[in-house]
Amino acid sequence: MAVPAPLAVSLGDPAGVGPELLAEAWTRRSRDALLPFFAVGGERILAAAAASRGIEIPVRRIASPEEARGVFGDALPVLGDEDAGYAAGRPDEDGARLALSSLTRAARLAVSGEAGGLVTGPIAKGLLAEVGFVHPGQTEFVAEACDVAPEAAVMMLAGPRLRTVPLTVHEALSSVPALLNTNHIVERARITERALRRDFGIESPRLAVAALNPHAGEGGRFGDEEARVIIPAIERLRSEGLAVTGPHPADALFAPHERENYDAALCMYHDQALIPLKALDFDEGVNVTLGLPIVRTSPDHGTAFGIAGKGIANPGATIAAIRLAGQCAMRRAAP
Image (tube, rainbow, N blue to C red; front, side):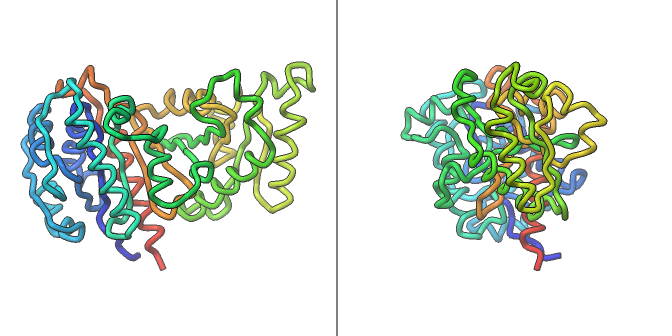
């Protein structure tokens, strides 16, 4: 199998847990079979963040992504000289500027092909907005960097035991019924199915579609969205040859015996997708952006300023994000 270029990892907010967990991930590179990766900026921050966890790691500056391959076995490669002071748990504008610079350059390297994929560290969106970040989140930022329309970039939450796709994301629950439509469900299901084939190596993906209402609407007693919007989408997808089932009552869809019957669940709103994922795979959950010409993953947690620098943050999701990015990049690099 062809070996992709090293992965680019953006720092996230340097006052959060991102840098220390990235340093921890490097120490576990062999145990967790991680492909070579490099951090973008933050050489001093990474060394200090590692020390806050009681680990000492060699950090080495590189001049190009390709150099990371030769350095990775002996030191954590860092591209670029952008840096800031390390103040765990105390975010400021200097740190936000570094986070934005790191994200911008890392995305550009992935888009150009110099990096085999992009792993983004957790950010504080409010602070980034103060230094010029105009996007709702990193997903939309990366989509724009790839020249992809925001609606074509689909969020998947992936863990060892479950994959979910929220069809609406950061929306008030009261707004969800009006935002759902048949075409929207069909397009996102198509993107999900293609990604499961291309990036996850699933030859014949199976999709389960959750209902919006309790008991899948109970024949219209609890709402008509199932009959009016969701079932027509499922029927269209089946007519195209996709293996799609539903609408499934969400209170049963995530039971162990049900999870054996699908490869990803399409959910109608944010919490319907994230609650089961976090209940099952909190420390190994990965946010994957589907529908992009590049591989992009991120640990499914925030900056956790309250525990940054205390050595107690769990590195599992960061390691999982890097590992999954590498696996997807390997599949894309295959002839």
